[in-house]
Amino acid sequence: MTKRRESLALWVALSRAYEKVAGASRRHAEARGLRVTEFGVLEALYHLGPMRLCDLRRKILVSSGGVTLVVDRLEGRGLVARVPDPADRRARLVELTPEGRRLIERIFPEHAEHIEGATAGLAGVDRKVAIRLLRRLAAESPEQGT
Image (tube, rainbow, N blue to C red):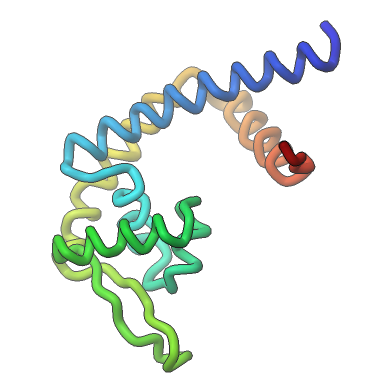
């Protein structure tokens, strides 16, 4: 197989694997009344604590306008709040409200089980190797323009 064909085969395999796992994540979030990005914000705040919008954007991989929209929706539902940043009076942090914390504490363990099931095709050493290789691919692959 040529290098180009291998690259294309890798892309197809990555895409199919991503769709399988992302689909499991999406279905679980939607069954609980959340979009995947909303779940991502709640999960990031749950595990990492209050964050600025720009930091949250990098964690959940959406645009700055996208994260603002997601936070606006969650704030409207009473799941997150914007609060002053004690380290910088000009900035605001996003944090979980008590209702948001109760929701994510209840649904995150189920979500982790769904992801575990979606990734069950790899176990043990294979899983560790895949993680290492995918991290290396993400870190070392140069981006090319269109």
